[in-house]
Image (cartoon, rainbow, N blue to C red; front, side):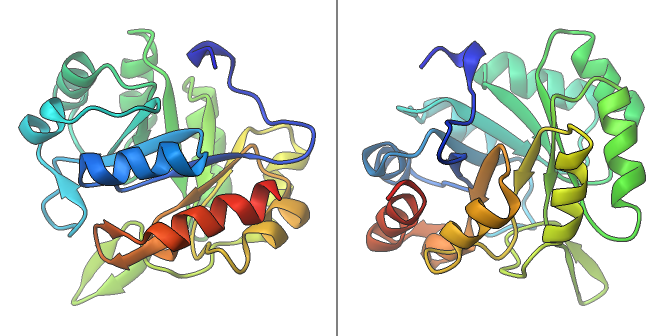
Length: 219
C-alpha cells in the first residue's frame, strides 16, 4: 500500500501493532496482516522503549510509527531524520507549538489525547496540523504518569464523539483479541492500536495473540 494513501476499508479499520522492541516482533506484525508497526523511541521509563541507535539498526516490513513522549522539537526532528517513519506519534503532553514545528517540516503527526482535557487537546492538535488523534488511557504509578500501554480501556464515547466531528481517530487502550471486533464495530475508528493486549510480557509480543487480534478484526 502506498504510504500516502492509508484509508480505512469499508469493513474494518487499519491495525497498528505498537511498542515493538525486536525485528522478530516487527516481522510478526507483518506476517499477521497488520498495516503498521510502532516503536517507542528514547523513553527509558517504558519497558518497551527502544533507543534511537538500536532502532536505526532494526528493519520493519511495515510502515513504521515513531512513538515519543515529551521530547523537544530538535529531538523529534532528529528521530524523524534518522528513521524516516511514516508518522510521529506524540504520546505525552506536547504543545501545539511542537506539533506545528513538525508539520511545518512536512512531518506527519498523530497526537495522543486522554482524560478530562481530551477534547481541548484534540482540537489544539488538529488546529496545529496533526493528521489524527489517538484516544488512549493513562495511569498513575508512584506519582509518575504512565502514558500508554496500561491495559486500561480508553474512552470509547469520546472516540465516537470525535469521529462524529470528522476527526481521524486512532483507538487505543485496553484492546485485545476478545474486544477488538466490538471496538471496530461500535466505535468505527480509522485505526486500532494495540500494545499490552497482544504481549506475553511488556515489550515481548505473543504470536498467537497478535494473529488472533488481526483475525478478530478482519474475520
